[in-house]
Length: 586
Image 1 (tube, rainbow, N blue to C red):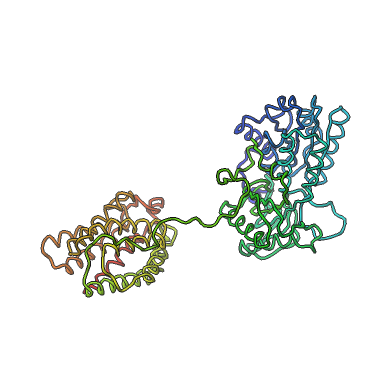
Image 2: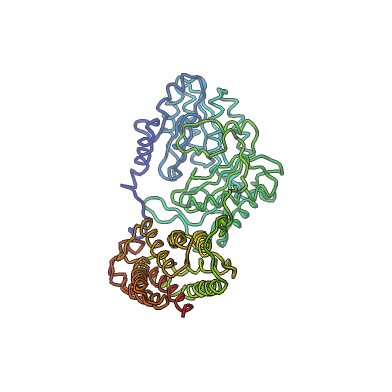
């Protein structure tokens, strides 16, 4: 296969990738060790475990499902895990060596936890029989909780998926309690029959050295696929997260589905939202929230909820959802402490074990745009208030009208949203602005809150800083000199917290140019409107001059100078609203 057909992977070699993966795991977790000559991860304190008289646990399977299964080796979970090549069942001799490592001289016995795949059943079964012949006490539980299959025809059976990890945790909890092998097997088998998993993929995975395992269109998703890229039950068009969760859980809980999970209203369940490898945390959290809302709307109690990367299919973008019907014993096992590095620890309120979906927390902040008026600040006349209202309205309209032009300028140096960001803030101001403007100080603070919350991002923070600092100069006066000082103080705040200086090719350049000219002209007794006209002209020239400047701040500083052929979008935005002010002053 040519390199162009292979998927990119950060490996040293295809042949050694599994061994080097396991070496990395034990390097990160020195409480784990590798069994010499085998792909077997064992607890380094295994001899102490055997001496304690407790049942030891072994699981494993093909690699490519990390952190399963070696990531679940630790106190309270597995005693050892054996790995095969990528998507390939481990050989019986390695499984047998793992059984010996945790079962020799252990009268309590060894439990093998095996996913329901033909290769795993055969290889683990053969190793178990050989171990028994050596006098080691061994039993095996096969987990197959896949709810994808709808056919009643004879098949290889339900596949073992992410629910297997819950069986690791339950068996580990029971073993730590000191239960005998027979009782652990009985309880684990009962738990596996109260569990279901359904998977969904957005993209394929690829075995190292090979191309994608299957093809999905850009707008397609596959429901019910396995963890090796094997086909699912149906292919669908991409829909929202809410609809995806509904499709998955409707299928899992549908009595017409031959492999459905029977969950009744009032049942207590554990829900696991699992990353198949290439799904972002952002998406996982959205799916987890939607899953809880779906289940709670059906009257199902989600008493345990886990969200993260449990059992993957290499880099496949997709998720699986697992449900386990709980009783008190299973809750205790899930809550029991473990040192296994891959088991998650959701943050619960202090002293609380049963999770509850939280309502939104409240805070004591005033509503957006509300500013205290307990003190007496400078107020303006109705005529001045009307002019100020017209100015702000015209500024918002100018920014909204300039959205496309500013986005186009920003595409060259940023992410192309400068115009949209400013327009969003302008819309918010226009919607909230009332004609009864009395105090410019409180108005400036209210505008600062609006741009901070509705505009957002860096621009929102900068303009909020600007307005908050400028407001202080308007507490006692609104003379031209007070407005000039407000402009100066706003600029100082941007420089202090934003890190930019004049000449860095940012919105600061026209602001600084305008402030310098305005301050000088007012000191020379130039009429206020004329002084501001000259300030706007200086700002316009400074904004155009940013074409030749080297960017030292903002996103543009990461872009090569030869690509910056247009004025800075933020600087042009400043000139846009300054010109809008001037138009209403004349």
